[in-house]
Amino acid sequence: MPYNQGRAKARDRGNVLGRLEFMSLNQPLRNNNGSSGSNNDNNGRGASRRAANQGRYHQNQQAEHQPEPGEPSKERKDPTRLPEEDCMQLNPSFKGIAINSLLAIDIHLSKRLGVCVNTTSSWGSVRSVFTLLALTGHGITWIFGTLVCLTRSNTLAGQEVLVNLLLALILDILTVAGVQKLVKRKGPWEMTPGFLDYVAMDVYSFPAAHASRAAMVSKFLLSHLVLAVPLRILLVVWAFLVGLSRVLLGRNHVTDMACGFALGLLHFSLVETVWLSSNACQTLISIGTLSWSPFG
Image 1 (cartoon, rainbow, N blue to C red):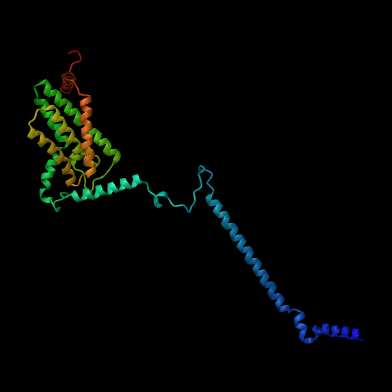
Image 2 (image 1 turned 30 degrees about the horizontal axis):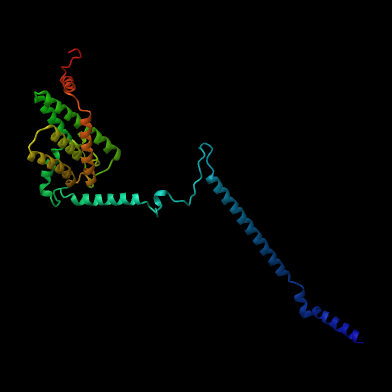
């Protein structure tokens, strides 16, 4: 009996799910099945569309990075990498810092010393004086004066000195013009070179042509002329003022003037090394005056 009662209770418990109120729980509705199927279809279509779009994007990226048939193959560059000029150097060298600091000081000091740049400057009233002083160190002025003295000289020693001085002036002009053309450094102020500057090829700032010429000429005259002490001091002061006048006029930097003085002394040493003798100078004078004869 107890066994039969247990089986009956289990049978009744199983029949509970078969009642009417529990039928909806056992059998899913048709509408829900239809909606879930449509959602699955829509999800499948969206996934396929995304996959197709991603495939087209990757194909376009590969086509952009591939070189054209007519162009030579080049190394691929990372598009996220910035150019070197846009990147900040976080650990510059001590040499670079020192050079940049010296250039900044040079530019600042040269602008401060440009007191005769124009007539409205602080020293604008004496601008014409410094312009005339700078003209005394111009290459055209010294070449013309040397040629005039050479035509009026009657001694062999005087002609020898003047011919070597003329060659030293030509060497100075050509060397300074060549260095200026290579460096192409402009002055501290935006100024247009004059007509004589273009003739003497003194267009750029570094090195200072007037300072180089004044140093070479003063050293040359001190070595080959017998002058009194006051005149020797005056000659040195003149050379320094000629170089300084170009800085005051805003044509050169301070470092341009210093390098010009050093280059002028170098030109003098070179001329002294290759000094032309009196016979060679007479030959050059004869060629210049069209009176030279190879059989004379």
